[in-house]
Length: 320
Ligand code: AMP
Ligand code: MN
Ligand code: MN
Image (cartoon, rainbow, N blue to C red):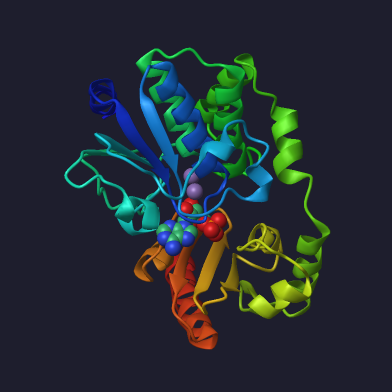
């Protein structure tokens, strides 16, 4: 698959490189790392994402070049860290790419193989790890900026090398990126150790109202709560990852309601429990220990559906 991807890249010139909506550190890091490599190959990549780069990742070199409105013609699309076409959002729908080949590079177990070439490696801890392997395969020399972007993807998707898919292979990839000039402590400081106080206030609000239902710990974020705390970004700022650290819980869920009423559901599970199937059955996707979906309002109905599906999955998986 890597050879088929490399072949399509060698034949192309103007390439639309695009990641999933509501991008995380792996999506942005992979996009920027591959973009730089393609430029070094003499290609003309355009980097696209439906949503703005989260504040946390604005330290990454080149992030200001990511656009939500890719212009002009393309002869190839490369999709990164995205499990289905829907999740590429508006830039993919609006771009002039009808009939053009798509390389689908991803590590989600729920990937639906929508590409012309589907390179989906569920044993990879991050898409950025796969992008590194592709860059090496293409023979493009790494530079410190490229290495920083790719290591940002690995560090964030493994939560600092703590997830169960942290293998010797991904640690070796990180080592190569450090040798190419990326600083692991600098990246860790940027992505884990700094957050705006508005986010801490939002967590405080959500935590006072969290609920433990069996071994499922869940919390809600509403637009009103966001306004009260002056929290301008979407998402939960990593709250769900904190909730799943509760020893009394096997699964944590955050329901983040958007201004338009849609409910973004973030799920985390302890090692040994798999929430990717629940997310997929509700139209979303993800990994065994981290998955999500988007549901229509009303909020209470979305919560009821998700909690019921999660508890049913827990019963099946634990035999209780
Ligand atoms: P999050 O909880 O947003 O950090 O997402 C956890 C994992 O689930 C990530 O790998 C996401 O890419 C995936 N994911 C979240 N929401 C969706 C969705 N609506 N559709 C497909 N995958 C999703
Ligand atoms: Mn992602
Ligand atoms: Mn990823």
